[in-house]
Image (cartoon, rainbow, N blue to C red; front, side, top):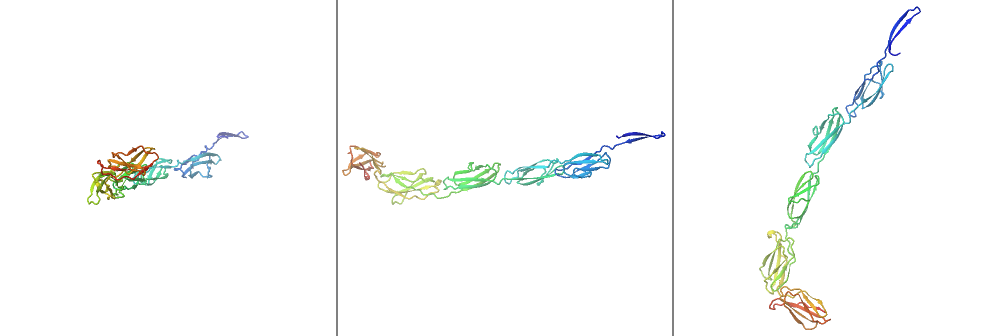
Length: 436
């Protein structure tokens, strides 16, 4: 029968009757009525489900997907739980219940490293996701948000969300090595010679580097340096600065003597004095005298000279001369005197003779000009014959052509200089040269 009110009439054999009214009822709908407490943190197991069943006919029986048969479960991780509820009549209600948890609390660390060794301009910040906002931050420095303007080091962070869930993070703020400068140097050879070199080798900091010298140069290497103090300022890409200096001293404080001393173009009254150039000379001093004399005559010569012509000498006299160099301005660093050179004034023959061209009946006699000569006397002959003289009236002449010679005949010739316009003095004759 369905629930409702039913009437029954009972009649006996005597026609007596009795009427009864009866009401059939049914229990209310069976209901589970769960109370769910979710987990406060990801990974926790503090969730619970409590049931307040209604309807049906008590007492009730419980059967969970976990196998439990109690009305309430606790210590639950996030997940889905199925419940089947039975009343006294065997009626049942089924439901699936979910215990939740917030997303995992996550901390991402971000940093800006220190720019220069020893500075406190590093930054540490974090990005937090998951959990249940709002969040509280606590750094090992005591800061409660981000760390600003800090030095290098390891920093730890504790983040707590609104449910008291905790997550930690750490970050290492680095700093570059200190800027370091090492000089590589080549010392100037002498105090007066600009041949020194400097190279600066930089380590640490953050490349690239810029260079600023007290000379105005902006490269890592300098050349052509005099002795002195040199300063450099190094700046790296973050503006970190290091300054240092070095003094270049000369290898030697000695002015070497002049070499290569000799005399040429000797005439009865003049000569040319030669010397090899001195690499560091700022000036020269020459002294000369007659051989055996006590006093010297001195003459200062500019540094760009390597010879000097002297005049007004006496004929037939032997002269001695020396030279020294000054290697610093104001003649403050002189060398010792050079080795002596001597020469004797006089009239000398040309020192180089040759015959060219030579034809069958003609030839050209050639000689090197003799300084101081006013003319020349040439003597020539067939070999074994008598000498014939020819006068050449100019000291600047360096050849003479001869004709009407005999073919296939051997000749020889020699020459001497005439050193005065009046025919005196004259030199000795040169060695003989021959031709055919």
